[in-house]
Length: 403
Image (cartoon, one colour):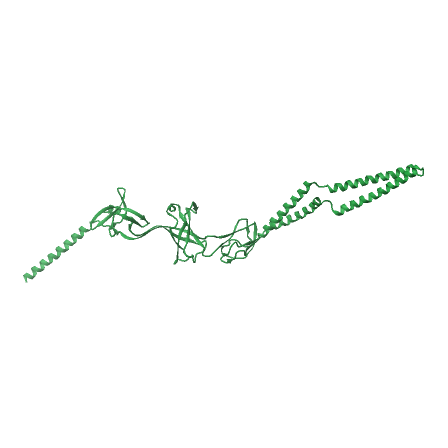
């Protein structure tokens, strides 16, 4: 019995000693530094630019107002199909119609005025003058015969001298009248100079051109579709007033679209032709479209409060579901490497001017300089310095300060 009690006492002492030692080691372990670590792993790394953009036709058919006018009628609506050459919008220009009526009246009046100058006096006027001349010539011939007869009688003293003088006076008056009529005819035939005729001809030519131009402008009241396709923009309505050169409609061929990506100025240097793109639209969240950079930006422009470059991108395999003027999300892959050795960005710190990581092997810590490759917002590629599976300390500067 005494031996049994002694055994129990020894067992109890051993248990208490074990508890004490365990507590001691736990207490000692709480002073050991605590680190957050991550493994260096092999995986694909992709460097991207995330931005936004707009879908637009590659070769849009844009329709502009050819004249200043009111919109009389709109024959189509947005989203409808239209064939090339078909009536799209009918305009009405009261100004052109009034100007055309005035120009035609001026041309008619100018032609009437020019007729006298170009063709001479009217036939009726000339016929009347010729008849008067002929009648005067007959009367003068008869008067000359009568004068000869009276002079012969006077020589025979069979007539009075006063009678002879009276007949001679009548003959002289007829001669003067005939000469006056002949001068009038000559003046009428040579009334207008070659310069006068040329001026009248030029006047008619200018007025004719003016009428033709106004008639051509009047035909522009009918605005026709420049090509076949779908109307995706039609901002005018009947009754609205448009000015020459104002955009009336936009037409595109379905599926022939591209992306205009708005890339912020600091990222433009990384964009190159051929880089892959990914497009997402909130209206179809379960679908994505891919493409490639076709034309990097050529200049920087202002967009709201941003400085951006317009990067034109293709869209692969017929962009079903996309239509012009959609605002979309864009991801441009500027660099890619498969099976790269990567660590979190927070593992990299500067040690004596060199990028380094803090390796943790058990309780041993080692600073390792590394060569960096591709960099994303979360990860960095390690070219040389560590191996896959190595544990690196995250935020090593903060960990060292805390411990």
